Image (cartoon, one colour):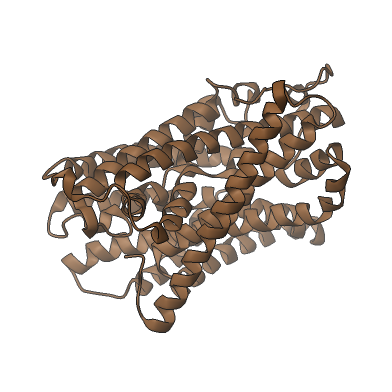
Length: 438
């Protein structure tokens, strides 16, 4: 795992932070887990279907290790560059730019474009996650409603989400979101318990499952798995709001514990979900549960509720990027609060509109995961590590340089292939009327 400290300066950025409404280690743990555990985990069985169960187990574990490593070097790199500049904290974009200034000269010309790229990708990823939540909530309620009252188009349910989302988007900060995250995590324990009950019943012979699937579907697995294990923007934002940020990184830190839990859930859900439902698995495992059983419908309501009350947690980074960095300084101070609420509501409505335009859950997850997170979760953290270590040391046999180059190569190859296939299938879905993602 990455070193926590690179330099020898006695200045400690943690000691100079003035955090309003700081969150505890437990609150940070809850927020990290809830910011990652969501629709991506529930889509894990479909991801395993797209790779084959043996291939998916091996690949998921490898991707999980790489993701955890990249998160550690990201947080350590942002800390180190803040230490060298003697400032309390840097945002992801500012930290990347400052780190590049410490790196090889040929990278210095990338500073301006990288700042804009980070903020743009953070907005796209978290806004895309909000759209995924809208689709997921609508599908859960539709499955419930189709059985108990009438068959409606899922887009009608999406429109019904507008007012509730506008209301919950008024929650002002991460500390205020902690009780929501705790309630969501508690409800998820019940929901996961119900899903496990169905998953572990009537398991089909494992010999009937594909160990390795058609390789053309593997990019969909890659994008979906990265989506399920990432949360780059919130990972940085949560650390910035902690009361004791020193406990965030490291093998036993809050971040590592959170990621280990998420990886375990991803492997368990993906493997047993695919084992139970095989090639009949749907985009999200909830859609594979029976529609005429009360317990299954309770699970749908629980997950819809959980995704709803943590919807603003996913939107937090989009709000931070757009409002705090680009819009806040352009409005009068006395009108800032009211206009921020209007902006939040516009973001909520926008996520519903985009979800209505593109309601295919599998393709949204795969594209957003592969395109945005290959940069935010893999390539950019590796660039920070290369730059920060450039004037100091890359370790024995330049091991840290080799690891960072491998992470970048993994991100580029996975991001390119993982983005192309969902786009190709979106075109086929809307032009030819077929959906190859299943």
